[in-house]
Image (cartoon, rainbow, N blue to C red; front, top):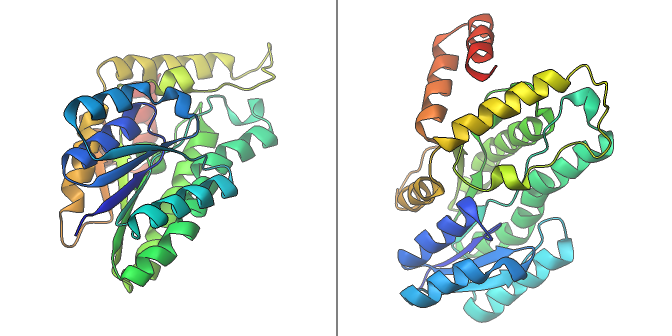
Length: 275
């Protein structure tokens, strides 16, 4: 039986590579994105390699857009085996520099976008008595640091949601898996946002600049998004997947340090690493 996958946020980076990797592995893959005008790269590769991949419009912030996309998939394929919740972005700025509205916008995409996707997808998988939901979190979903509390909070929330879903959905044969990339070589920093009304005299300006600069330097030597994609494909083959999978040497390093050190020791360690 043909297996069907849906990936969100496929215009670039992890989403693009994951959709291609799934298609290469035999899944009929729906590569979704908010703006299909950015689909030329993935469509050219899929055409060149003759992959079972189709680009569809899907905005995770829009309930009707999600319903339309899921309806199209069920109309065309009558099932959904894999959902990869990848769409998201980051806003940089310390908490006092970010408005409540900007914080809400961050959660709207990174957290509530995933909730909306699962609301539409889980009933299909329950009816099938099978399926896998892969939530692309971040090492920042396990480790807090300054300069991007909105992004980090949204990923912490996603981790908690995913853990709860493992209990709720496993009884119906549905796996819930968390992927935790470290710093990735992608256009994440090109699409990252900053406060709309920055304070010229912000007491956090220097700190934010140091953290962003440090992460950008790490990104130059970061993990390629293909590694994340390959991890997802590999995990989907496992009969009993683990709750979470860190990806990248930096992710493994930070998580191991957090496990081995006291909270204060880890704070001091992270200060040295990031700024």
